[in-house]
Image (cartoon, rainbow, N blue to C red; front, side):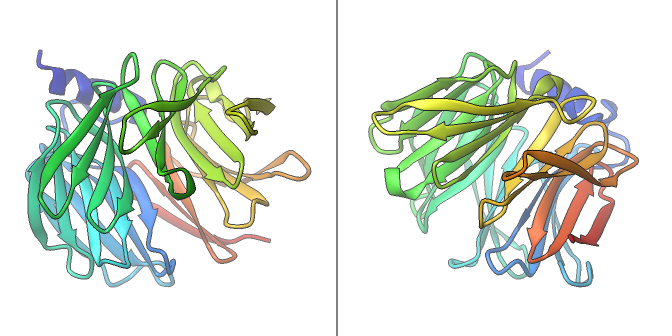
Length: 304
């Protein structure tokens, strides 16, 4: 069994995907900066796809097929680009409007689990090898790779003010790493057994993982970090966490199909929707929730 096949089996188990690859399965959902367009990625059989649709009506759908299953996606609306990460370690660069594949860059010998945009010419990848890979989009080449996690790296975010990326992985570690030197400038040993997703608002870090783990960390001066809150609001693994732009609410989605709204002030949770299948992600579209499950079913609801 190859490392790529092992990576697929692990992800299939996590998302509830049929390991025979029958049917269509979604892995991630993201939204454009103006919140008008949502993008999904996943697989149909052994092939991958990227799909876009309008968030107000869930119409005007555009679909592009890829040569390999796609587990990661990121959007750079300013520079009219969409980036997709493949099962075999390829990063696809697609046109923002029509999703036409413009370039393919082989970046890793293992699967890409997450992507973040650093600049017009640079993206960062989280890979199942545990490495964080920095890619020059213009030159279409890997410029650096840092082996950080003992096990898979599942998620990654860019922190512009620190010129660093923050990543989480199967080892329960969170690393803040300089994109230029590869030096770890801050590390946190989460109480979560395995970190599936993370998000940042100002100096607050939101982390979710296996066993329904949900944590809020406060990032202090002198590289300190304090665990402010911990709970297990779902019945099983939480797959995604997204903070709103005001620091008031956080959306959680999990393998139990639940979409949860967490109020950061009152520390209370409210169930917004129950998908029939694993909920892979949710987005804030102004005062509206948009969520997706692993079968590609979408749900919209106004948040009171």
